[in-house]
Length: 512
Image (tube, rainbow, N blue to C red):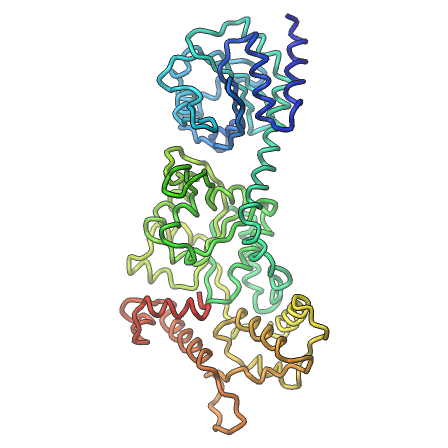
C-alpha cells in the first residue's frame, strides 16, 4: 500500500472529530490493519524538567484524554537521548530500559480503570520522536502485546506518519492547556472572583508614599521565581501585594491561586493543597487536582502559612525542594512548578522556637521577606485610600448620590490608630455610606484611640463600642508580643485566656 495513502487516511481521521481522544481511537483502528497494535498514545518530554506529560491514549476499546506528568529518574531522562526527532525507535524489550519501565510503572489507566498494559506482560513498542520546539519533544508510541513484533519495514511505515502526528501532538498540547485553564475556572470561579474583585487601584495607592520601599522590593523580586514571605499585621494588604508581585512577574499570564491556610479544615488540608485520587477516601468519587497543580506555571499564595499542620509543612517542604507532590491515595510523583508567595501576621521565628513551625521550611520561605507597614505608619496614604474606597463602594452599592466628607472628617481619620489597618478603614467607609443618607460623612462613630490624649468625659463625647474596644485591646496585645499567641509571654497568657479561645475571638472579629 502506498505510504502517501496511509498518511492521508491517518490525517483525515485525526481531524474528523473535535474530541481528540476519539480521533486517536479511529487512527488506532485504521492502523490495526497495517501494524501489530493494542495501544496508541501521545506524550511530550520536557528536557528542562525531566518530565513526560501524557496527553491522550487509545486502546481497542476507545480513547481517553490524559493529563499526567511523570517525573523521570536521572537514568530515565538520560535514555531519552535515544529518541531522535523524525526517527522511530524500536523497543522489542522495552522493560529493559529505565525510560519505559518508569513510564509503565506509572500505571496509566483507561476511564474504567483497566490497565492499558500490564507491567508483568511481554510487549513490544515503537516510538516516533517529533521536534515540537525546544525543550519539548513529542512522542507517539504504539504498543502491542508479544515480543519482537516490530521490524525495519514497520519502522519505516510508522516514520511516514511524522507530519500528521506532529500536528496532532501540537494541537493536543494546546488543547490540554486550554482545557486545564477551563478546569481551573470552573472549579474556582466564584472563589477567584471574590479574591480578585477588590484588586484594582488599591494596589498602587501609597506606592509613591508609605509603600515606596515595599514596591521597590516587590519589583526587585517579581522577575524571579524566588519564594517571597510577606509579613505584617492583619488587614495591611498582604494578598493585594502578592497579586502585585504576580502581575509584575513573567508568570502574569499564568494562574494565581490564593489559599488561606487557616481556613481549611485540618482533615482536608492534604486533599485541598495536593489533590487526591479517585477512591482515596470516602467521598472521593473522582480524581481532584489540588491547589498546587492548579497553580503550576503561575503563582500560589499561601496566606496565614503559620497555621499549617506540621504534617503538611513536611509535604510543602518537599514540593519546594523537589518540585513534585503526591496526591492523597496516589503513588505517582506529580511535577508542579508554581511560584510560592507566603504571608503571615504571626511571628514565625517565635513559632520555630516553640517547635510549632519547621525551621527548614522557615528558611525556604524566608528567602526574600517583605514587611508591610501598618496603616498608622502610613498616615500620608489615608486621604487617597479614603477617596478610592468612597468611589468604589458607592459604585458597588449603586448609590444615587456622590459621597462627600464633612468638615473635620479627614482629621478624625488621620488621628485614628487603625488597629484593623486598611480592612478596618474599608469597612468603616462602607458602613458610613450605608447610614449617611446622602449627607456629608463625619465618621462620628469612629471610636477614640489610645494614642490620643485622654479627653474629659462629656455627654457629647463619642463612646467606643464594646467590639471595637475588644479588637483594639487584642491587637495591641498581639503587637506587644510580636504576634505570639500561646506559650510563655504570649498574648493569650497576658490576656488570661486559653490560646484556642483567643484564636476563636480573632476569627470572630476578622483578625486573621
